[in-house]
Amino acid sequence: MDNDNWTIRAREFLEKTPPFQFLEPSDLDRLAESIQPMSYAKGTRILSQDGPPSAFLQVIYQGAVKVTRTTENSEEMFIDLRGEGDTIGFLSLLSGDRAKANVVAIEDTLCLLIDKETVLHLIASNPFFSEYFITSHLTQYVEKPLALAGTRLLHYTSSNKLLYKTHIGDLALKEVVMVRDSATIGEAAREMSDRGVSSLVIVNHDESPVGIITDRDLRSKVVAVGRDPSEPVRNIMTTSLIKVDAEDYFFEAILKMLEHNIHHMIVVKNGRFIGTFSNHELMVLQGTSPLTIVRDIESQQTIEGLVTGSRGVDSIISHLLATGAKASEITRIITEINERLLRRLLELTEHKLGAPPVPFCWIVFGSEGRKEQTYKTDQDNAIIYADLPAAADPRAVETYFAAFAEHMKEALLRCGFPLCPGNYMASNPQWRQPLKTWERYFSAWIATPTSEAVLASCIIFDFRPVYGDFTLADRLKKHLLRTLEGRDIFLKLMANVAIQVRPPIGFFRTFVVEKSGEFKNQLNLKFTCLAPIINMVRLFSLEQRIPETSTLERIHALKKSHPVMKEFGDELEHAFEFLSLLRIRLQHEKKARGEEPTNYLNPKDLIPFERKLFKESCTLIAKLQEKINKQYNPGTGSIL
Picture: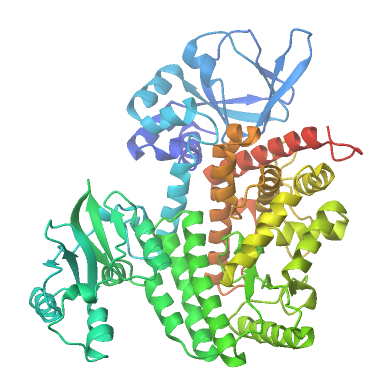
């Protein structure tokens, strides 16, 4: 092949390969022109430990190499396998010192050679190029690709700004309009009208904020009840001010508004009030507001109305992807919206059936329990009700909650939440029981961990309350954590679950995919990648008796106490974010094509930097599974 054609091929390859893809086009052109190709037959030793340093940075264009070190006992210690897009010789090239490892081609391999002068120039002129090579393999560039993964999705919107990564202080804020708490309601209303604002901050004599009123307060607290406008405005103000810092991200403001069910927030900078932010500004900036969907859901008085309102969630996912939100940000917002829908369904059901005969708590588990919902997931729920007093009629209690659970099952199904294939739903009598029965379940599962008990534990131990008497769920959680004390056999079997499914990458760093059937040449991203992480983190959390249910919240807590997570927690968090975002994007793209969302991914659809991150994530999962295997030795009869 002539040089011109080779230069074109090299440039096309590098513009899809990190970190070269982040170079300016002119720099990429010059680099491609300077590159030399080099072929190595299978078995060729490219670098030798303690041998001469590499004269070039070598980028693998095709093929694969094995990296090893020879120990003092002349044993070969495996270090790494590297394939397309990976590099060879960076450290020895840079230092000019002896090579630190053996590098051997394990198949016919073609590399692109970049001379030292060019590499040094790229390091000096491009900070990301330097960061990519010098810092650790997973954490060094995961944030940049995650941002770029969001940028890839910008074709879904006309916006060219990663809005969810924008600081609140950089957005258009409304001027803070204030009145004294001694002002009358009428004076406050005239001030709002004259200044054209929908909210007022109420301050005391020291100009310190003590409350806020909105136009909705005037309608509901004054006009609707015929209140005297001459009363002090402090009589109708909301005193629980929710503030957001100017340095907080737009995303955090949305979550606060959702969690506190408010439509106006005060923005502060260095302790000083600089403006207000409202749902109106959110709609102007974003087009579709999660708060608007929530308000619509909470205003519905019928199941039919909620069926219609639930359809807005998919559009929110599209907007969140397009604006560069992380997977955890998307799942938190979607979980919050779905939870409002669920609570409204529960309220309507209770209104229809009447007050319950005893206090109860509706709990959720699975992805909903972990706050990791994306598109509508299976129904995973149960009922805990208070232990019956002696005078109570057990049959009447069971009749009520059976009707309640059946009504909820059908309502959720109509709103797009499919039935749980394993029947882990409150409509199953096994999963609607008094507290003492639930405590007996948990004690039995942990003391006698049959395969069915371990399966139920993996599902239900991720529970959290969403409606009713939360103290029932709190008491059950405390019982669970107490019962886990010293239960090594149970944890050993949970460890076996965590290592059973291996990540989909083979010895030669090739992807392990389905060989036939509907999903031929694809892999199940949820089952082979995300589930092992969830299972490992759950295991560590049960070990440490940590009450959190969210995988990321568990990781954050474990980084303070668990030895493995102290070392690998940050990397695992990045891997979980990356894989989750990949899954959300995969499902979104399928829905956009009118297909049913699945968890199956064809690795060939990934661009090179995504493939590299995917492989790094799989390698990390395998490394942690091996640590669990060594700690618990699940194949033996005792824990080591």
